[in-house]
Length: 300
Image (cartoon, rainbow, N blue to C red; front, side):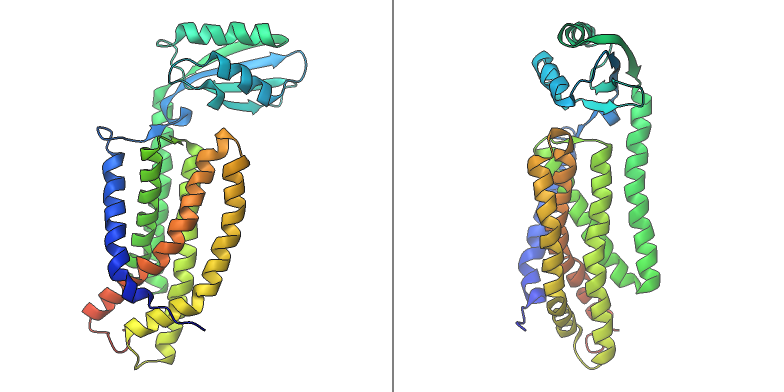
């Protein structure tokens, strides 16, 4: 088995990560770039359309794309089937007061292009949207806090801090990419960020568990060598897991359509950055903390 000096290379990768995280944080500032909130977080107008016969979602998107004006791309509207026969709900990011003419045009265009039996619309308040955004980010933060407590109990605090630092590293970089490229952030994206948290943690815990086993087997070895050996022993599993996860995610990103693109992009970033951070963020923190605590020889 080849032995790679992962911790030795951390002195190059950690500064790169610090730069990426700093740039990502700066891009999240609204005055610099800011995130691009989707319908779920901004409010808008919802159309409930009952057709006389079945209508394909792709045909609806095509018609909505032709109505789009300026920066408003109606083809990215959320279109859902409901229990009532031949009925679809179209949720757009249009404010009733600011886009009254465009909203009226959507109704008349749909009636002209499709056999519409009935169409109704309602405004989605921004208060509800703000509550959704708040709950979404609270879910991410709560997950991180619970992880910190669990790993502190299951392992030790230094392990927990390393794991949480890796998770925050992954989420912040993913958010930075979303801000730079103005990718829409919606509830599906929040779900993807929670998935990133789980994926990043999974690989980190596997390596931590191997480190703990090797510390018990080699009580006289240095923590530097033990961590390096543990990462190398887990490397094959890490790469195989990442590669097999990467394949369906890249297919989803390429062929999943515009509605799922943000979700797939977040997962794609999570797979790549999560694999990297488990090696070059979590482990260097664990090593540095252990050395500072005086456990260089026994990993205590």
